[in-house]
Length: 464
Ligand code: PMP
Image: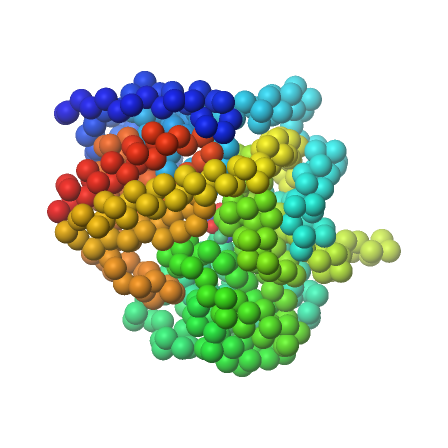
């Protein structure tokens, strides 16, 4: 095992936070004698796969984390990793942010769960309503999955129609309709211009896929005719304008205009999934792109590191969640932990610290990673590329030009390469996803960017 000191991180550029770590060294992964491996063997006796979410699983054993601070995390074996995942894009300031921690700590002393509203809920709602112009009203829940489900149910109730349309390959959480065609493959997906609605989870009733039309991302003409065919059955189009599983491609303006105008000409709503893309700007990606969706689903960063989701949008549509004149709401929503005060104070403490300057710095960090990786790839024998915006990026082990899911979808061989890259990066003190999605937080320093790029360069050499 080679020792290699990596420059200790200086203070965070934006927040005066010390993120110094004790230095990193190349270690061996997998390591069957590690505590992570021991935890995994123990966990398998009580938890299928040893972890409660599929994306935390790494073969042959996942990493169990002990702590995080700023841009770095430490595992139960004392290995440090630059966090290039950030809990799949939900951490934006950095781990253990002191302002968030102070707000949460104060809340803990006052109780954590009540069947009553709190002022914290109103404060976070007001902040989001002010920042995102299309959101006039908002309701909180516990995950992005629920946020998307709430938006779909609201659209169905408001329009009185059953169908939704969504983009092939796009991830929107695990609600049945929303996960249609998430994992389509060449054997099942049909023509490029007319993607087949394919169930994702085994056992999904056929009625679900019949109620979902599937659009090819960035294909305006095909999307228009697919939507037109839905006609007056279409309740809403669900769209993420920077879909990670579709490869984080640049979105085509004509495609977006077509989706919005066609949906509206049919009397259907547009739901923007900004669960991830809210981290692209103060007003999310809708602010960057100048879009005005009818409904928006949120999650991740708005919880300040705690479980969260929210559905927001036009006041008249959001009224489906209200019990007008004492009647049961058109779409009743419950949720024992919805708008939980710990999440609400954490979310407010986090979101309230974000300014235009924060998003400019996140862009700079992302640009540093993209630029550095492009230089590495230019020197490399194999074909690689990097896509993305702001603090989000995706590495691809191929040079297909990526406009939609079919080009971005990894072959079995490419899937193996990405999983191997994840393992090689672990050895080089970088925590990264297994399919190439990367995300940096605001505590990331320029030295951290260099660390990431060098780790990728070194890892690629071992993949040759
Ligand atoms: N929508 C998008 C775009 C997402 O990326 C995710 C989660 N990665 C979700 C919805 C679901 O969010 P959650 O995991 O909080 O249910």
